[in-house]
Image (tube, rainbow, N blue to C red; front, side):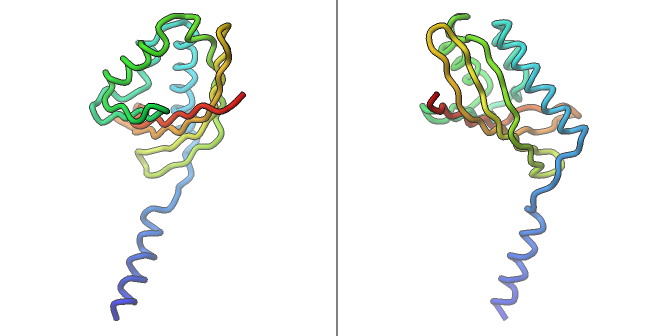
Length: 148
């Protein structure tokens, strides 16, 4: 009898956690925020770029140095790592995939290209977005560099 309950539990969890399609309106809203961030970055406006992130201690940014928690700590990391326009360069995003994890959470996989006089960079990122009062914000950012 226990195996039947375990099987029922596992099957029901598959339905609860199954992947969902992202609605057209949510897809457009998330991508709009992402490309607005790209524009702010290319204008040298890190504070405006940060408006795409949820202003919360729950925000996590994960990169080569490990996770950083909180909006202010993430902002400080960007300001220290990209302290001038030469280091910031010109950013270009490509969206690779969008996936709805729930009605209020979307995962986006993408690729970034950073063109700089000091040397170009590129890599991949996974962003988890959360909808708060009809606005989408990044709650988790995992970014990894890739060889050119």
